[in-house]
Length: 189
Image (cartoon, rainbow, N blue to C red; front, side, top):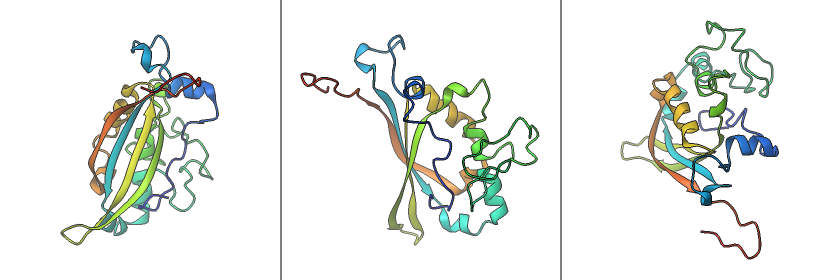
């Protein structure tokens, strides 16, 4: 669970499926990238401060509507358990899952957005208190993707979402994770 109390990382990519990893994570030959990048991945790191005191004063029903999942089980509003796939087609007007819910914006599950999936992880952090006496804690968000556009397109969809009232990005960057060494005689870099 993240520090806002919600299960984090649901509906992530299946790292055990090589075809999924090749499609979404590893740079492939013919990707219009330098040859040395093949087998590597674009890495995004974001340090996201969570305004937990403010969040904790928000009604549970509003928190769940902002995220798009039930806080206790992690289930989408159209399902019973965390791993159920949200049914946005059956809820086109957002009567169950608001149209601006985080999960719906991040992954609308449409043909136009299916190439934007990313491999992601959230790592909680706590640095004590800031100068104003507020908790200084949040999420170190890390994602890997074959093309940086996968992350950028997702962020564009999230721009202006209601969750922004409760979080503040404070740093991070874009990097490239080199492909691994395949043979004993190979070198990295």
